Length: 215
Image 1 (cartoon, helix red, strand yellow):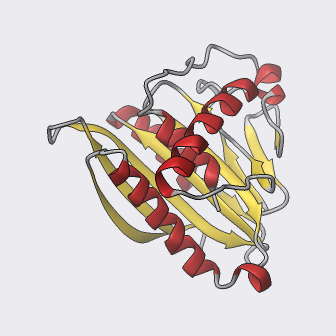
Image 2 (cartoon, helix red, strand yellow; image 1 turned 90 degrees about the vertical axis):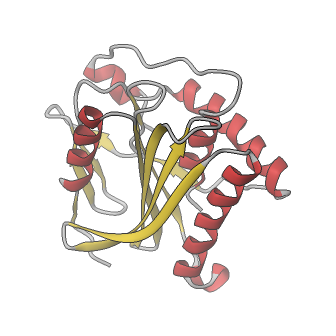
Image 3 (spheres, rainbow, N blue to C red; image 1 turned 120 degrees about the horizontal axis):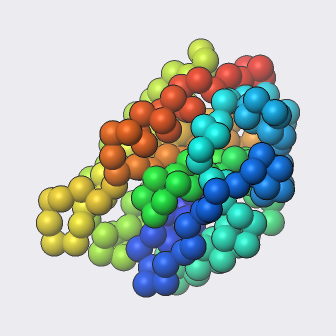
């Protein structure tokens, strides 16, 4: 289950705000990575799924302490609202960028054992339901649409969500999750945005992604 993006998204609606990223050098950005590499040209690569993309150099990388703080907070929300216990020990964080409170790029992988866990597409549908139900239980107003998107010739499942300001139809932010099983890894990347400029920058990173592993 791609839990990290869910935790981070839920953290947006919790009373305690997070610290926004500050300007970082290339080496400081590299220090925040626990999986994958970032080269001198700001090309990020994860060999486990053959994924590469050009990173917008102006976007701050989420720090390790920031990720730890908000994921724990968001995890608590899911466990309390859905009455479940989450084991995130197998989750691998990839590229996680956060420009400000509403504009971010998040990605993770987790090894998926289809023999033990069953059909991945069913699993992915359950993940979408978990997100939707958690938003409902937190009284967050939203609309959503499931679909598909082709990137570098691979079809990824998508979940598009529009989040509204409480009691209004004014948009708070937009969210899109992209998911696919690649090389037996449950891969997910999520973008959030609240303006056209950041949307364009985020979609450029998403759409220019390449995958050398095709299965």
